[in-house]
Length: 274
Image 1 (cartoon, rainbow, N blue to C red):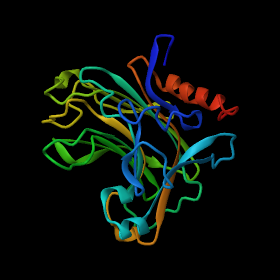
Image 2: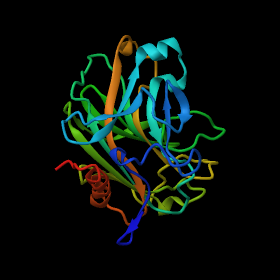
Image 3: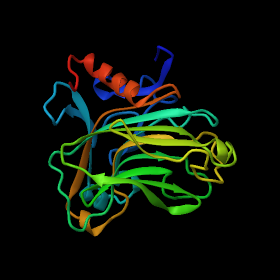
Image 4: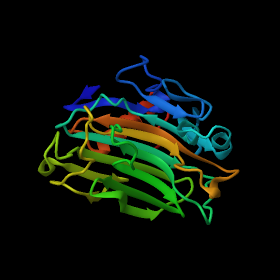
């Protein structure tokens, strides 16, 4: 989709039918949930529902239950996420990413809770194995927290944090040229994070993703709900979040242009957020 010099590479408003994909492989979205690992379809854990704020459009309800994980303790059973096609991005290019979330209006903050991840930017894991993603946003203790992780700080550092409100709608935009010191020189790196239209963090001219990185392609975006471990606080509980839209664009896209792209998809359903 191209207009006015801008280019949407993938995604938009879920109400506009941007997912499920038109083809099962390549340039597609995939879900990971207790109902199946990396499948090109909705599931009971990742499905369309009416907007919880009462507006006239559909959104994705992303939900996980500790009971599902306890019954089948594998990676997919603690995750209800949508991932971008890993092959869509190329090293050396600048991309823009956009997530539009609604925090569960009935969200309960538990005193002993750990992380509930609602979006990630993740490199494809290479032979080195498992590590934290390059970027993740999680909810914990009533706080929305974004962490950045590379080989220099493998446990991650907090780069943005603030309180959130149940039922709050959050627009997140990322502009990135991924630099791992191998495929792209550190000095060429670009990483800028915007929340609700405001620039809240940036590191430019530095390495910004894992190295060594054997991957043919750089990072891909993920959205939904993921509870990383079998934490005691989660026993007998569940977590959910809502997604209005997700998309990736070229370097010319802005926070406002990607927001309007999702709004345009909602308008095709006869409703917008206005």
